Length: 156
Image (cartoon, rainbow, N blue to C red; front, side):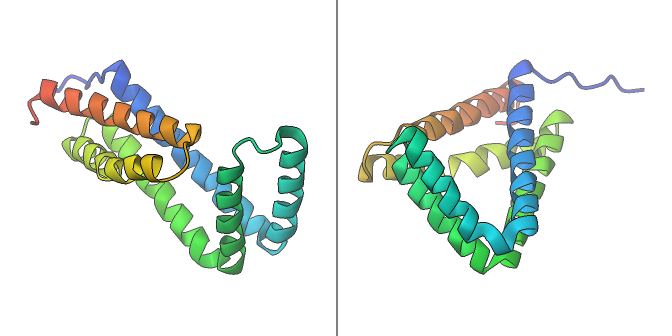
């Protein structure tokens, strides 16, 4: 009988991060499915409430999210499938990391690592954005954690 695999706390944290992203995507998909006819009205109300409470804080992100949401309401079935596909990938990766599968480590490092240059470019090329910086740093942290774990396991 084989011993159960013990995963490190840092890999557990990455796993939970993946689960949170997957659950967030599923909630987004359910909201889009339930309210796809009312997205434009909801966006207008949300933008008005945001400006009233927060002014121009994160205005770049709010505008980008507004554009995506409006496109999503026009092509809601396509967006719904894309969001559910994304959620599936997050859950598959979380499962693989939790069960200590080699492919999951590679998937994680490559999946996050491939976007780091793009995130860095947007951080430099566009006006400074704290949310983009936080996303970049979090993704770098995930790559470093998983990469170090892969080295410890002898996968690299």
